[in-house]
Image 1 (tube, helix red, strand yellow):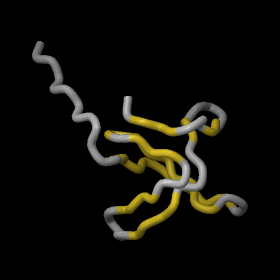
Image 2 (tube, helix red, strand yellow):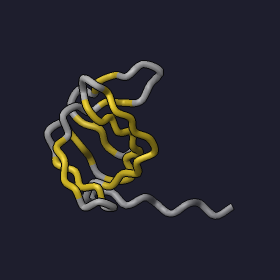
Image 3 (cartoon, helix red, strand yellow):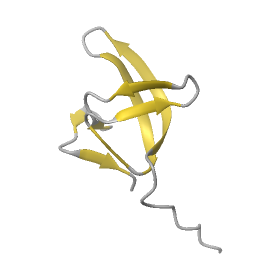
Length: 76
């Protein structure tokens, strides 16, 4: 069996959005998988389809209960 190539590391932040919803108190909640790089609260993100820039207000980890991350979230 041929092993998978190593994932690139240290590059710009890249993520794949797989779900989102609107919360009347927090606004738009976006779920994404981090592909490369690192993101922390306060970072700016660009949605490539709409070319819109947004600020991250809160970063968390997807578990059965939503949990805020301490500092940042990065690719595994």
